[in-house]
Image (cartoon, rainbow, N blue to C red; front, top):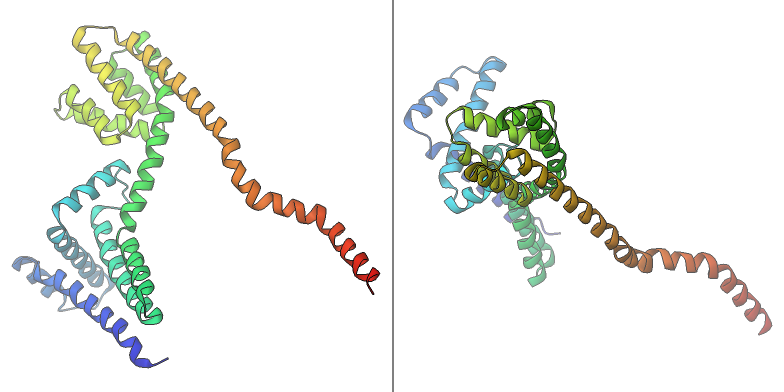
Length: 300
């Protein structure tokens, strides 16, 4: 292969590095540039290197935040909140991964275009670049979906525990605090955050609505609205909790039955495409080979 074909990829790497450095330096305030310059003077110990790395990461994160479109930032924040705000994946790291993935996808796109040299190479390269650029959002969306399913499964049991605590004489907030303290999982952590919001001054109605909006679970939103209506109209919260728990438990059972009924339909395609051909080969194969040998020997 002609070595000149590698020049666009090498150029893309250098251009990406230049863009990264420009984002780091051009968007930095004067005070932070002075700090970076002072840290760069004497790099003799690992502590200095670590400090420079932290400053550089913060500068890059600030630059990426300023240059990311507001609509994209809103989408990323929504997906990040739906995924439970994972500490291992902060917003700054997500933006950095989007930049790195976009640059790597651009280099791969150039390689595919130069290798295939037709429209298919361009389309495939563009698809690869877009997939690598939006990979963080895809991972956050997948994590959020799994988290919503986990919260929906934990909700009926949590409501049962809260109903028992309320019937035992505890208030609604005290029952929620007890369940959140003794419970585990995504729902317990969300209840803890809701109680913290109430303690810092947020109204109970706003804290409950924020809980429903933050998780995005329809069942939890129905429960929150039922609690708000019960407090508004003076309905006993123990009755609301019990009725909601019974309803959600019935929905969980119906959902399990629905998924069980879908299993035969989902098994049909693997059965036809993979299992049946293998069975035919195992059962009919030896007889077919023997018949072929017998017919071939009879015609000799």
